[in-house]
Length: 429
Ligand code: UD1
Ligand code: CA
Image (cartoon, rainbow, N blue to C red; front, side, top):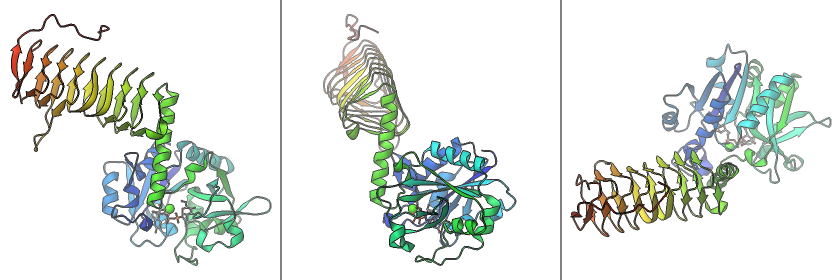
């Protein structure tokens, strides 16, 4: 892929989203839409990536910061062909291939783009594009073929006649072009269509007129072709990505009791034989060990690391925290910025008060500790090994509980210095 430059078009206004946020920054399963294509292009090992920004360029630039990406500005939004033309001065001497994708088609898979580039390299066409056959093709550019099945042109929905509207094969919006031929064709594109825009898709017809070869390959899965133009499309794309995340975990030996009601929103790793019950939301960077029980109604946020055999039950929220092997937090709790050791029992309704209105502080709960129902731990604070907090105690800032001690009350005071005889529940540890 070393002689391929990637171009992502992300300058469009996205009017149909009815939003103050640029379309490509809307999140899908926790990640901005644009990020999906950036990640795939990154994995493809492409020589260089260019992103064309325009509408709300400043905001879009923010997520492109500190990356090896060339950003090009489209000053007037005159259409997708004009957007590509803005890269011309940067790529004027480039003789290789251009992989052009649209920032609002985040469901395209790595496999399809890789196949597209390979096919393009093999056939030596001037353009190879990705197409899909849809049950409902309305809204997309239709692929018009000749009687001998060659791709002749792409007709946009607004410009299509009834015969063309009936074509089920559509333009996904991912193309490989030989750079020289594309730039030469772009010079000839005119905005003679209903929307009066310079359409990139017109290049196909122009290349055909010049007797250059145009090829199309089909996506394996029609869902990949769904672009995001409205909130309805956004909701649909979200369910598709969630399903993909769930499929991956199922194939890795995780039980997900009710996939339609489980939300995996991020880079989530889960060990074998863990069971995730319905209505659980797992988001951001989360790592879960083997044979854990999660949910129902658990909320695991970014920075959560659970060791093996951990149980997180109903209405428990965990963020930026780690939980050691065999520990249990089973009902109604909030755990933030906390390190929990092994075989700890965190009672129902326990709250770690990690935020004092200005800054967040850390809490440590050592191995074998027993946190009584309704305890409030005001961070920063440490609960020693095998220590016990009584029901309803408030353990105040820096009033660390020594190992083996029992504390009770508000504010919590030491009741017993040592509980050396107390057995830890989880015998395995
Ligand atoms: C486009 C295709 C259509 C295809 C569909 C797939 C064209 C003319 N049509 O239609 O054939 O089936 O995508 O989803 O390309 N953009 C700019 N600058 C502009 C205009 C657009 O950067 O001046 C970018 C947009 O940000 C977007 C992409 O180009 O990422 C496509 O534009 P959009 O208006 O969404 O085209 P569609 O009508 O969806
Ligand atoms: Ca679109």
